[in-house]
Amino acid sequence: MENLNFSKKDFLFRSPRIIFGKGKISLLGEQSRAICEMDTNKKINAFLVTGKNSLKNSGNLEKILKNLNEAKISVYVYNEIEGEPTTLVINRGKEIAIENKIDVIIGIGGGSVIDSAKGISGLVTNGGIVEDYHAGKRSFDKPGLPFIVAPTTSGTGSEVSNNAVIIDPARGIKQSIRGDKMMAHIVILDPELVLSCPKKYTAFSGADALVQSIEAFVSKSSNYLSDIFAIESIKLLLPSLPKVVNDLLNIELREKMMLGSFLDGLAFANSKLGAVHGFAHPIGVKHNINHGLICGLLLPYVMKYNVELEHVQKKYVYITDIAVQSSIIDEVDLKITECPNGIKDKALWIIELIRKIFERCEIPLHLKDIGITEEDIDDIVKDTKGSSLNNNPRDTDKESLKQILLNAL
Ligand SMILES: [Fe+2]
Image (cartoon, rainbow, N blue to C red; front, side):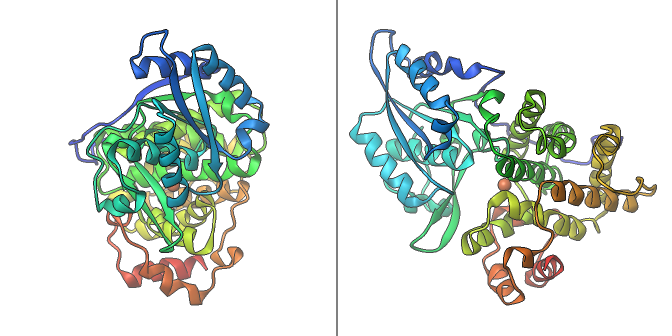
């Protein structure tokens, strides 16, 4: 493999306290108490943000409530998160948290739940509503409420990122609120919580994680440290994703996906993403398409656009070498030709391999397969902007963005 000398050395590293391991969710009660810095006899009020049904149906909600009650923590369960987070659900959550004199926010669920919990924690102490903060209009100057998260999917990396992506239905937009003070204080990564994640969401969130690690790796803001996380993330995700979608109860694969997703979160939180995520926001909100699905669909087309740059080719070849050394080709029949020689050919080969992995995840190959037509493209391009696009390794303009989408049609 090439030496890691193709990204800049400067970095600023952000990370919460991380607890990783099977069964570690049992530490939730004691960690919640510790983070509030309250003596052992004082009652604590927790606000548990979670999805409508999944935590309950998996049987984990009951165990978690018992664990919190044993630590003398009373819990308000806010299970209003359905689909992607909205301004309405977060603004309402903040009001209820204030009314109930909440001491600690706990987010247990997928990326939407964690992003919602992040928004609520920040708004309770900083005041106002999401709309005041959307797209950097106002910043979170004060630390949020003590805040713990435990993901139940492996993919978004939201547990370690300092932003939350929120839809404003009134304005028909999807934008980030961002700030280091919004980061979770403690992250509990328990792979047993992910065992009940269904095939479809395992595939889509896993695809999102792989897209993010690759975009972070080639991002204009990538650096020495983010490269290390991105590479280790790709080493875990690339061989595990095509296997786990057909072996959902395999705890070793779930562990690898969870670690890979966490490392990917550290990578992009410290380097930013690329054009796939620039496109994903307007497409997600306008066409109501799952985030992981649209990211997986678009990645090969964006990689083909970026592959013209020599330094990007080198990084793609680095990923090719990871794929070849992982023996993924022998273990999972992805129906791909042998890896060629030559930098550009090797770079193109990994794009094809990734496309095959996403095919295994039942991600469609073309935009028309998800109902997007040529008439929609100008509108999508108009709304494709933001820091992700600015960090894409190859510069883009309206014409090149349009061409990428036409290729994906
Ligand atoms: Fe993503």
